[in-house]
Length: 316
Image 1 (spheres, helix red, strand yellow):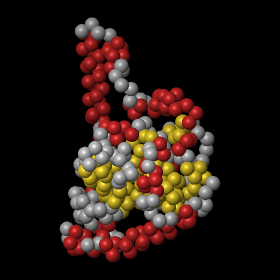
Image 2 (cartoon, rainbow, N blue to C red):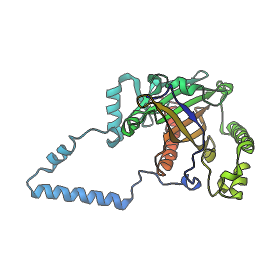
Image 3 (tube, one colour):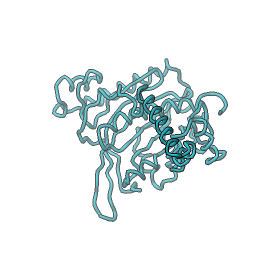
Image 4 (tube, rainbow, N blue to C red):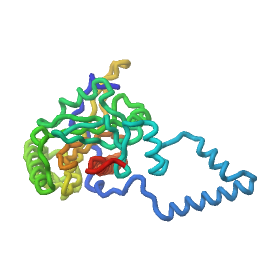
């Protein structure tokens, strides 16, 4: 896993439009007609098996002999299997799993990222934490890294290419937030980003003068196009503010003795979790245009599930 010879840099590599992506439909949605068609196909298959002298129950047993994928199981069965595999370290709240060994703290408050099948603790990867701890926003402490080991294996990547970083702001580690007090923080974040844009926004990199002016003065939702490499506001709510941006991974293949660069897409979310402020970065390798709505949807899910597993009350 290539880390010691790499950098994660916000260097522009142009490739897309963004504003239409926030409202993209979920990548795994299914229509009522599609569900009905699937049921009809299943029924027809059972009839065909019966006509051929094959017991439908045995036919289903044969299908179930394939590799077991936790995501394909019903929620209750999935949690039961996870608890058996992970033992006392695995818990769930509101139907969302989490691992106690992934705990991190803001002040004295214990917080946990949600656990998904195929995701691992980044502390177990040599050099991963050290590589990213020093590259964060000033004043934020990197408290936890999780990464998608399944995605890494399936893509045959040279580096960890789908991961989430959780940061605790040092100035607010012992503070408690409400939506009202968090609104002031969001305003400060926006003002800081807009002020920085005035220094680095380059007119020549925007498709139109209108986009350039909208971006420079923080009117992101008025833009029709977007120049790669710059942060743009994706969405916000009473307890979160999410920006979308692009970056790249710079690494070195030791066996071939050659450098390489890979485009990345990422989100940065400032949010309240259990009355604590947390910053969450989600970074994913960019392969094609479909990766962008997938990343935005996953960011939203991770944000929602983190609020669920950290809410007050006993575990399931």
